[in-house]
Length: 303
Image (cartoon, rainbow, N blue to C red):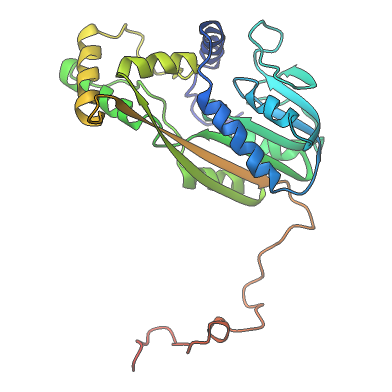
């Protein structure tokens, strides 16, 4: 059993996804990520026999992969499988699977992709270990999730409004993982050649309320266990919108919202992969390669 704290109400998260499907989901971020995922996979010169789309809230990634020849068999792992709101996309199969408890055997997959799902996992280190075990040697994980500066404007505006109106703050926006922390988690899960990078997007809305409505349609509203159960006070909401506009509006009155997309990639270890050289094994000095003079530690140049 994991000793990590339980941050997210997974049942509520599934309810949010079902509601977003009924409202008509807002998919522009997922569509962008799906295209970027194709661009990244295009640099990998191989075909993946068996791939899993892990928890992606819509079928965008599956549709994008189906339009290429990169994958032979695509499995959609969806916690809503078996319901009317399941997102099959163009997957060959759909299985009921929670990102925290994968149903796949060891060394059975060639590729695992995921978009905007892993930021809601309570035990992300455990999930990454499960994914690495499910991958065949030299299998690839490629995932995108919301990063630490996502919705930073909304978080700041809510905190300031609650402090002024209610005398304290409650968690209104979920905590997002830091880029460096995610890279360390890939290493901890024993992925080879781990890489993390970030894509920062600024989206403009007519008002803070328009942003909040869009978040409902993304299934991105607050699923925190420690969220406030009290209804949001009208005075707090009104003050939040005023603060948001005061601090984060452009000259035309439209407000900015930041979405930070963190990309993770890592390979299940294989003997063919590059490995770092052992300390002291270099056959040539760096100074010789650069054509410079080596200065011993503690000495200053020019002495």
